[in-house]
Length: 212
Image (cartoon, rainbow, N blue to C red):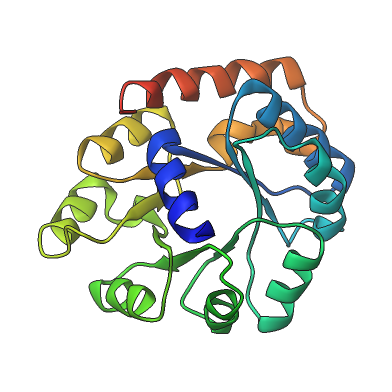
């Protein structure tokens, strides 16, 4: 089942890259480099102009064992469009109607939640994985407090997660971290792709210590 495979492989990988850009060419270049460097989970935000086109053009180049999905997926129609261009998972900023459509289509979903009530609601409605967002609001201490009564809920920490924050969230039980700006940096606006490769390797080296 796609959802089970998605969660199992994310637990192994521990890292999801978030690409959000003002220009589709820059988004495509950044996502391609991340995949080439071995980042196995890449999310292209639909707030990126022609974000669906970016996913469609990249999809044939995704290495075996890697996943390309869409972020900021809000509506049922968004889910249908993401699936039509080959997107392999959807990410939301909150518990919204797109979750129900993803469940109907058996498309893995990463659903944004912050409070314990939102977290429980997201899982009850079928979220594959809960995205603690924005994780920077409460930090690793908040995640630890949430996990104490909800130890079986798989949580991805997203929002304001740099290298040191990533380490701290993983140490308190996050199944992984979702990283945008601290990883993608100025590559989203046409910046140096060699520097993006270096940042990707730094994050991959970090999460390697938590794999297994």
